[in-house]
Length: 185
Image (cartoon, rainbow, N blue to C red; front, side):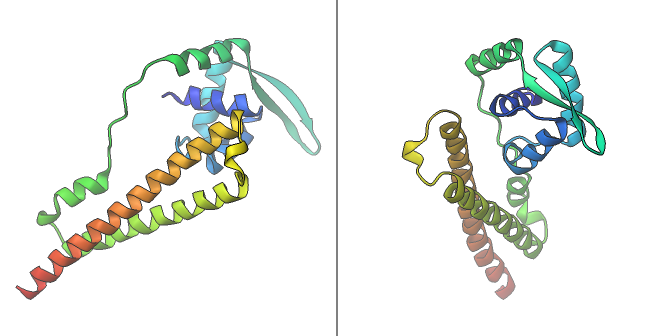
């Protein structure tokens, strides 16, 4: 997926300035597709040149005018074409898995600390996702349209974080036992 498509999705849900888009990426879409503020502004310019978005200058009190972007018909067509395009599942690239694979060649205690750090980070994200689910989607069976689609992506994030947290706990249990055996040998 290109950043262009993530921006088209965001702007299809709600028009906004580059700054507002960056804030939305920081709070929601960024959990699944990361982009820096500079990347967003650079891609918005390219999308404007392609005719996928258009902007309107909006005056602000005490500040420079801002450009508010919205998706054009051409952009909606591009988004529709992208949605209909078949894509292969992305490869799982997880540096932690590679470190675990190489555990016998390093400091097992340091690796245990790294796995615990990852587990804690994923558990924090899981807690945040569950909070968002409870706050924003109290009645999931009544959802439709954009709200349903956002909820389904959030549920996917919850499942991923549950799985990763459980996997890290399993790794910690197994490597801790191995570490103890090595310490007593």
